[in-house]
Image (cartoon, rainbow, N blue to C red; front, side, top):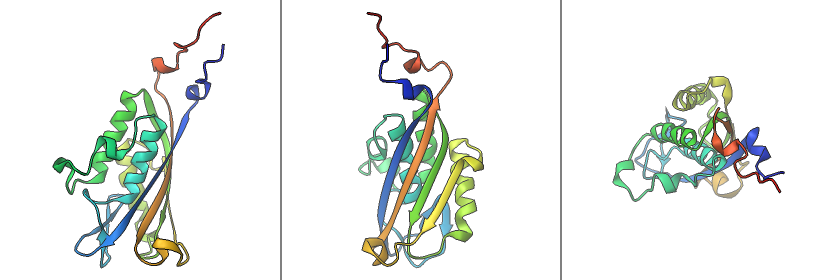
Length: 181
């Protein structure tokens, strides 16, 4: 009998999104890379919108809520913390839920600065924090062609997708909900 969980035997996908306003007096950190720019991003942690979107994608894929549930911006323990630390913890949450991350794909939507010189470092940092091969991480950057809050220079946005598969022995995927009738 079909238990509605067949897709979990092969994989699950999650989508993440984050956006942050530009802020004076902060450094710009994306994918754990410090990027020279007159402004950084506003936020409680290091405001790494790229890593935050990936966190949400992974958490969504394993059905474990979102980044704010696990790392609330009201908790002083997360003040100015490196988002790569949070990403490593998200990997641990995924494993505790019985899944491993297969790959992540993210798009940073930003007018300036151009990110191409920094993408390889972002990929390296994200892969290391998640215990993935760099080939399993994709980071792209696009402009918004001057449109919307990104185009007007108010902030940036990031979209991310993560694919997870069950860890060997994951009882959630053994058909425990199957019933013979």
